[in-house]
Image (tube, rainbow, N blue to C red; front, top):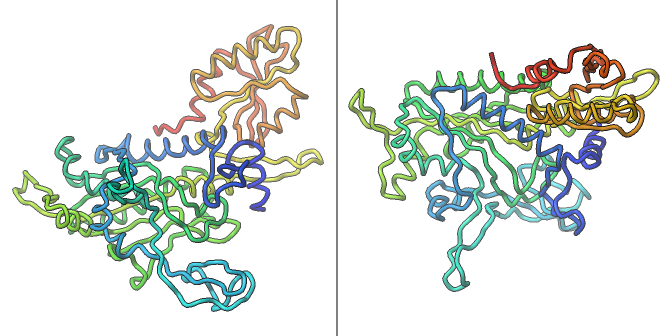
Length: 433
């Protein structure tokens, strides 16, 4: 798959385009357009449904993006959240040393400078005047607020270990070299869980989360052959991690991480207890004991997973001597679930189709289109991943039936209009039986 073609389609069809484009754009910042916001929202809703709503051992959180600056001291980010950078003495470009495969500039072959450290957290100031403002950071990850709120959450909800806390939200990192479209950016969205368990159960829960995570990616319609697990060697683990594995997807630019699964041990709760002076241990009333729970952390990127879904869905195929561009998106993820298309605009077909579309809109996202030949309208919907097109024709006026065309097979079936909402609804829902 040609990455340039996907980027072009995303801009042309309103999935994703660069932020502040009329001013030249901001490197590493992206805006999700009308179709893109629906696609990513569907992805996040499916994740929440799968990992929070239908589980008995999960609760949710939506915490502030800006936190007390001591949070990042306690977590180790102020001291240890550094990248090692080098500059090219010829073209003046800057690179992360761990991303280089040679000792020369990857762009021009020039000599590189001595390495230097750079903290990639984005700074901000809180206060009404410069002399009283407090310097803090936009959060570089969503997990720390879960640890900080741990005691309030388990006390107020009466959940018992083992249980997890889930959060979807924005994070910010001052990436040195944002690249590969929305894969590596400065503002991104995480879908993150901190799962608290007893230390003796950590291996069991780690294995269970691996199984659940893999099954979820397959449920998105991503080809299993394009996914793999990557085990981080012990010498490269983050300072808090006892073990980390990543789900990676084979993008057109190479393998890239979609989600990390880490055993964080008791590091975070212990650190925040120490720095805040508040006891964040868990009291097990049934066993009459107090302890720091171990944390298993599944942390997924909403933007990266959206990109993987788009890459995996993009296809070009020959149909009747013409090239058909189609996004084979899982119906539950598709921005538009059904397009309602009158065969022609005259003889009352347009009005009948418009009324049908308004009724279906209450059930799921729909679209009405009467411009151009019916075949051309089908192609427009194929290109944005709409799984079903409904054609309202002269027979519809006579007996109240419509033709439903499947995006992938292009096969058509005739069904009553009264059955249409149920027919499409059960095929686009993310609910599990």
